Image (cartoon, rainbow, N blue to C red; front, side, top):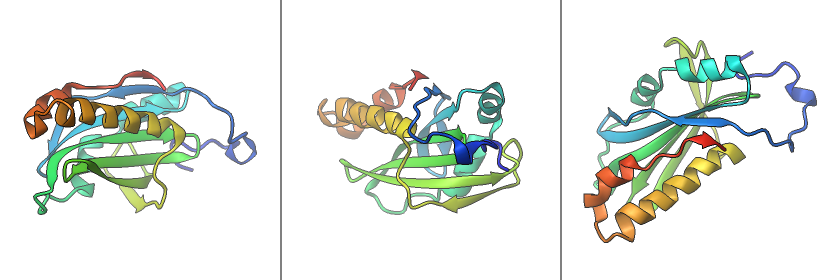
Length: 166
């Protein structure tokens, strides 16, 4: 069972909403990208500890390759989510001014160590992760697009963080 898996998950109400605590680490520079790394976990001390212990920057280094397409601006965000049914790593990278490349992976193995496996998922994001996507969209519009600063607003974009309960 993965660190996020709940032994009673099969019988739980998938429509029940339980807020998650969201934090954002300092920006990491990895593989030519500057990424805002978010972490969240379902409400339990062990899940929150697992999320805090996971080496997100090392995982991003494994999952990202340097941008070769000039339409990738080298800016983005990630979400590490220790959920009831598993551990997930999502990555969003801004592309061509107003597009977002988004990837989702399920993480299995020892998440506190480096012996993990990533499986690409066809899913976009769960309801809690979407709160980050909304915030990131609004931050991108405000600092890059509506400001007229374009990529000169990159530092302002990277300063916009969402933390608290989602």
